[in-house]
Image (cartoon, rainbow, N blue to C red; front, side):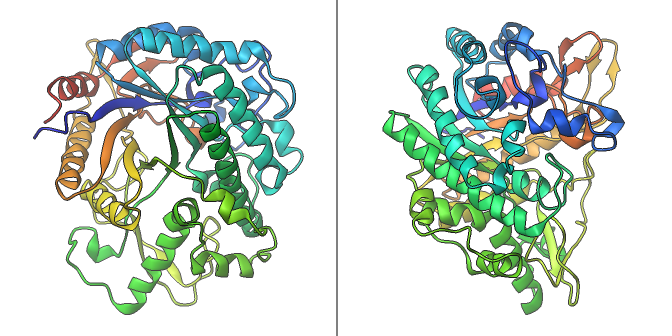
Length: 456
């Protein structure tokens, strides 16, 4: 089972999840610094203060990447390292870290994929409204320009935002992520301003000569319970309508404006019911509709729904009135997420049909399991099976015509898993948080062999 000759193999991480060094070299506070230090917000009171100490150990981590034969490494830049207050003067010591990181990657033959925003908004901007404040989108574009000015001579591949749905609806909707607000109108407004920031930043990057620009979304096929294990199952009219609505709220809310310059009717209707649409100003959709080279797809599990007459909207899903979010009949990971590998091929094929003018890349895919170190090894057979199953579906999608350019496993390292703290391990490399010792798991060695043979 061989992949295309130019298929890109790599791994992904995010700044707050691995870097640590939260008070070094002029870094300002992020919303996740404040949120994680707020009692009761993160499991076990964990914070990202140290995380994987990647800020000091990046050379060793890149040596690991080289041993695993990675061709690409997707990392995010911490906005508070570049602009401690989210605007104004640039912090040269913060930029210098990413300058060193990029040089070390290139010396090792690894292509850097830079994500500009993976949720660590400067707290100073949140104090002025965060993503509910339209001005944050313009500050984001300025920050993107500053990073490109420093790294653009060596970095070709850029992603503006990571999972704006999560940033908006878990951060401002149900409050389980930073900044912890709970207001459906604010969540919808934040989603629009995130998209505006994407469009403004993408245009600045393009004008500055960026080679490839990507928007990364957490997408999933929206299925009825019967469709989880039977793709041919035909949903009833009410269930099908529920699935269409949730697909619009999860995926089309972001990709339709970015690719086509339009919002789905379902999103506009949700906004009208939750504060109105005054935040969508004339010309915004034209700005958001900046030319894209790639859509990044973060896939973990399908979204399973059915009609639920009379149910109120879920706090994370403004506009989901009358929809029941249902369990899937499937084994689960340590996160409780159902394992449905063919959901990935279904998703990739659909997105290639819905957005044929834009290429695709799997920018995150992986699983948390309860790993155990035994005799100096981590025999994570469950993770190997998970990755194997999903890569077979990636290959199936390519054979079915999906324009898929690469696959980046989540994640290179065990790390700070947001509200779950350090309880959940997604890495293909084990991290002992007490000693910071790294140990490739069996899945890392298996993935290395996949890369070497370019196939399964």
